[in-house]
Amino acid sequence: MKLLPIIYLGYMFVSIYFLSFFLLLYFKNKKQLFESPPLKKKYSVSFIVPAYNEGDTIKDTIEHIFDIDYPNIIQVIVVNDCSTDNTKEIVENLQKKYSKLILINNEKNLGNAAGTKNVGLKYAKGEVVVMVDADSYPARDSLNKMLGFFEDKKVGAVTCPVFVRNTKTFIGKLQAIEYKTIAFMRKLLGYVDAIYVTPGPLAVYRRATLDDVGGFDEKNMTEDIEITWRLTAKGWDRKMALSTQVSSTAPEKIWVWYRQRRRWNIGGLQCIAKYKSYFLKKGMVGMCILPFFIFQFFLGIVGVGVFTYILITKLISNYFFVNFSMQADVPLLTLENLSITPSFLNYLGVILFVTGTAFTLIILSKLKDDALKKQNFFVILFYSVIYLTVYPFIAIISIYKYFKGDNKWW
Image (cartoon, rainbow, N blue to C red):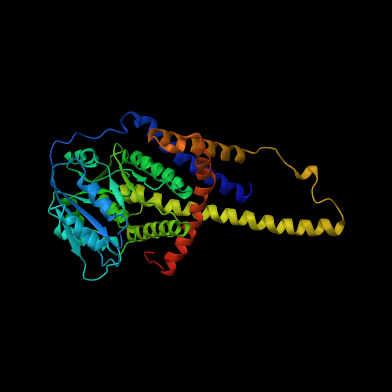
């Protein structure tokens, strides 16, 4: 057998393996996906909202926080990282309405969310600390659905699904599917203690946990991923409440979307580099999370490599074939050139595509997504066929940027 079919077969096998793994987790736990432990203790809660030039959204974010149905929110701390717009003035005006709203103005721009969050931690007094992005809007029942997990003293952090708020554009619809798929799979990973991120739009931490790990890593571009790995390495459990959500503003321009994904990838590479000594050692970081991340990048490299090889060889062979045919005065295409004989690899590709799309439909149906409407079915198809295939190329660019040292936030 030639090398290329072997690589392709291995690629397909791994993809089908992981898809089967998630399907098994789903069918085993589908009756309890939306269950949350009852809340017995009313923990004191401090919110921290990092903000830089968030004048368009900060008011709605703060109002959504104070609208949460929970009686023991003792602080909402907005850390203004030297915004150049009207963020500061908006928060100052809201302080007249909300006595528990605190504004901290950094003396100099820290340029990253991790540093701003650590500033907020110095002022937070609650038993539980909630991180909220300044363009995100927690559901009214979020704390009641999430805090019950802390009845288990081993739980250090709780996350929930992030839903896209701006879904009128085509790219917004694609990201809505993506975010819900990621959230659902994160819930499934929770059943094997493999949650690898507590996303910034809404992440709830036990204060003692943050003190134990020393706060957020200010050198990492994805501090929400890095701190989750650190919590895991320290033995803290992470949980996912699928029964509530936070809505967030997703990028509406392709270039902004690309830069965000590139930042996520570079942050993942930073985590791999930082925790490389854990590789294949006892514990979830070394035996599961780290290998999973490494394998993701490896598959991306292989996928792009195979695609590029096939494309180049086809272009070269077609170039010489056309030149020869024209010079020899023979037909460019004959019936013998048209092969419709299915191969085993073709069957695997079809199985993977059909199963993956079916799983996406299951996720969207469980999360009651509007994409299931007939007029939006093209979006699902585009997501499965085109959108997901772009990611390996972004991974390759991110790897190049990382080793080049181009690790700018934007």
